[in-house]
Each structure stands twice: as C-alpha cells, then as structure tokens.
Image 1 (cartoon, rainbow, N blue to C red):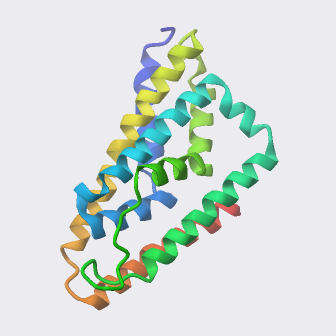
Image 2: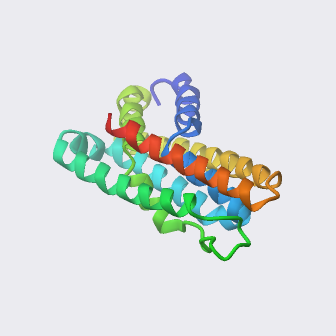
Length: 199
C-alpha cells in the first residue's frame, strides 16, 4: 500500500458519500417506518451489496467505461428514475402499515441492488473515489477490494441509520392522517431527488 494515511480518508469519504440524503434515503426511511428494521434488512443488504460491487467495478475500470458513454448513462438514469417514481407512488398512496391500502412487502434485496446500480449518485461517488484514491495502492485488484469494503460497510451503516430514523418516526405516528402526511412527504422528497438528478 503506497499511502496508508489515505485509507482513513477513503473510509470517511465513503461514509459521507453514503449517508448524505439522496433518492434512496427517503426509500430507506419509508421502509423503516413501515416494515421496521428487521423487515428492511433485505433492502439494507441489497443497497450495501450494490454499492460494494459497484465500487469494486469502478476501481477495476468499469466506471470509466460507463462514464465515457453518455447514452448508456442516460438509459441507466432513465430506468432508475422510472423505478424510483413507481416507489414514490407506492409510498405516497399508502396509509398506515395496518391499513388495507398499505403496500404489504418491502423492497427486497434484488430491487435494492439493482436500484443502486441504476443510481447516478452511486456511480458518481464511486467513480470520483476511484479517481481520487487511485494512488492508495499500486494494484487495481487491491484498490477494488479496499473500495468494496469501504463502500459496502459505509453503505450498510448509513442505510441502517436512516432505517432506524424511519422506525423511530413511525412510533410517533398514531393516526391514519399522520401516516398519510408522512408518506406524502417522503414520496415528494423522492420525486424531488429524481428531478434534481436530471437538472
């Protein structure tokens, strides 16, 4: 390893990059509020696995290849946005978790994994990290492993924090109207994040 001091910087970078609000933040909060932490574990693991493998692929060179093909970026962004809009609709139109209108199953591992791979924010942060920390080690394989570990652990921690936030929020919601207001707010935040991605 060329610069051991950069390892801590990579860990901090990964944590800040994954814990800052983005499209998946509202999704994790909503899942925590509706399904609790245990019910959201597949979502958290899917997101963490997605960013882990995406970081490794970016360090190995795939990120640069995707970044150099604007059409592919637009297609990925479009697919990710469409999926997020559908999730925003499901969240926004649902009531309290025990109501008949509530959607019953949380986003699973595969959905969360694919959503991470279609997220422009995720691609941007891992490509930036791969470029910034390229001198961390002389081996592309070692860099891929270090980035996978940093982003995988940071992603799992960050998603867990937001999920617990949603769980704590749900304990304060006692009426159907409160749930509808929070669901509408989370759906709106999700839509605004999607709009921001395209601007």
